[in-house]
Image 1 (cartoon, rainbow, N blue to C red):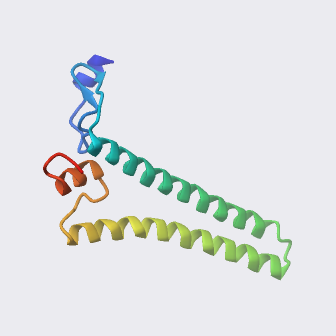
Image 2 (image 1 turned 120 degrees about the vertical axis):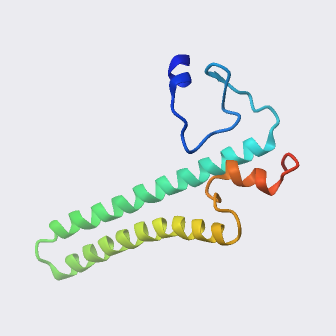
Length: 128
């Protein structure tokens, strides 16, 4: 494992305080900034994943309802509305990510969705 980590290319996203030495895991200790960034990253990622899965299943249930409607206009309309709501939901989630990125760039935090970069910029003296 240590050889793989040593030979790994530089990635555009680094995780300071995570891997040190030769593959050993770092102990962040009482570093509040690291703890806060981990929580924010995890929550945002988890919420995005849950939203994507939820809207995928809404879309899928609408499609199955449409297929199994048997020509009944009311069932077709209900299924069409579910499919439409699923598509709108996915668009809203993706648009929210882009809007947050644009707003972050406008207010001077182009890495606003990467809290491990943004929070140390907010508190240059070592954290909150």
